[in-house]
Length: 548
Ligand SMILES: Nc1ncnc2c1ncn2[C@@H]1O[C@H](COP(=O)(O)OP(=O)(O)OP(=O)(O)O)[C@@H](O)[C@H]1O
Image (cartoon, rainbow, N blue to C red; front, side, top):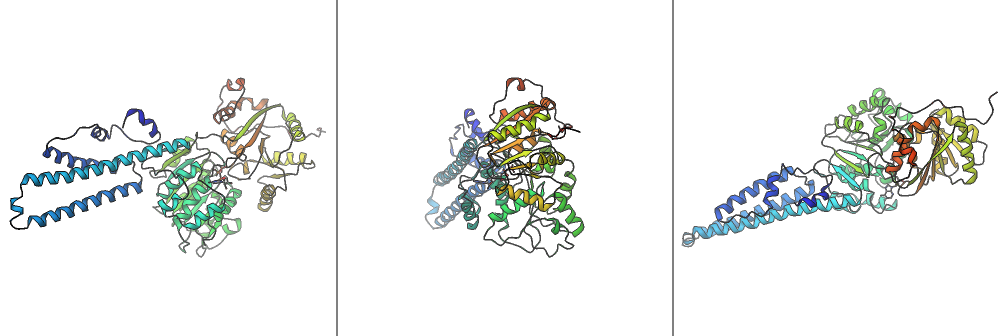
């Protein structure tokens, strides 16, 4: 391989030093006499064998190449047997000169070496094609033996024998081609590899993990839970359950969300469940109290994994991970933000995982137009908001505040205005929260005031604008909040209001804006970057009523 072509292999870890002999072999040293030729051929076989073991050949290609090799060995054996037969013909073989025999053998061996070299060249060509394709789709990978990315959904049938019903359901959903994360993460999981995946908000991560589960489960079983998907919130669990059922339509799988009621079951032994979607807390509760057995779980997905690894949930996640004790379990982590600390922690529980990053790690979706607006003080926020709504209100709009108290206050301020507002936070009952989500989805409410409880994973189609009424408390929170708009390639808008108290943290958000192609005033970029500690300053009460 020439030096100048190696840029194509970005993300593929091929150790040139380790395989120096392989490179040398392609540099054109050809043996001359036949004994040297035979030694060369034997060496070829040995090196190619060991190379096949060490190189990053996708499993399917590896077995194809091995098939090819075996066929050539069988052919060779047959030819040899044929040759032995003629040797036994009396009066003929005895006159055959040993020189002729050697030449014939050498020709055969030359042919098989050529075949092997051609196989290996084809393998390199495939690597190069994969690298070009990944580059085109902004897919970055690391790990060994990484399967080729998908060019189309149809390939799922030819490469992984995916059932027709799944392809039909994809077509019914209107999905014409895989998104970048689906192109790479689906083959990784279907090849039986564990996976860390980081891709922008709204880029189709849900189907990237649900699809392989449904392909692999094939049919329903009475053997207990076979796949577990952990989500940080009940809303997201309910949404993932719905998406999973959509994809499984027409097939009798038991896909369940761990509701409060279900978690209280005394006995799970008779529960038919193929895929279980839950928050860590409810699952921990069910395992402890209801003796839910997860020892046969074959797939474990940690969705919004960085959130799941935060203090407060980590212990419950750890409990669930331990309960999924099947030694051949396949684990995967998905999020739009994957800090190094989470990756490092996760590596301790994963085996030979493939890392798939779409675009730049921890960055916002490029389809969202991001703006920063200075409002001076808390009072200025309400003024700016009312002015903006008066000028143009393009619903649906999501308004984020920093805690439930402020959500209630802002709702009280806006509830009588002609903007059809509603509110969602953790003090509401499950039914009230579900209604708030459903009404917003159905367009019955136009402005939803929310805490970070709906900042992650929620797929409200067509949210035109996200307003950070209160400055987010981390770059990750910012990325997830604004990611409720601009989903599945649509455009969106995100406005972040900031006061004097927020200025020290502006630079961190500005970095996210610039890395996703947005523009930020020079003075903000020259601020010193401050280490985030949850930025939730004490803010004045939201009210236009004068204090008495
Ligand atoms: N191949 C596809 N073609 C078109 N649309 C798709 C495709 N795959 C998924 N979608 C749609 O894209 C939207 C966003 O997908 P999804 O909710 O999985 O995003 P996500 O990457 O998980 O986002 P988040 O990080 O916010 O959780 C959904 O409405 C989904 O139906």
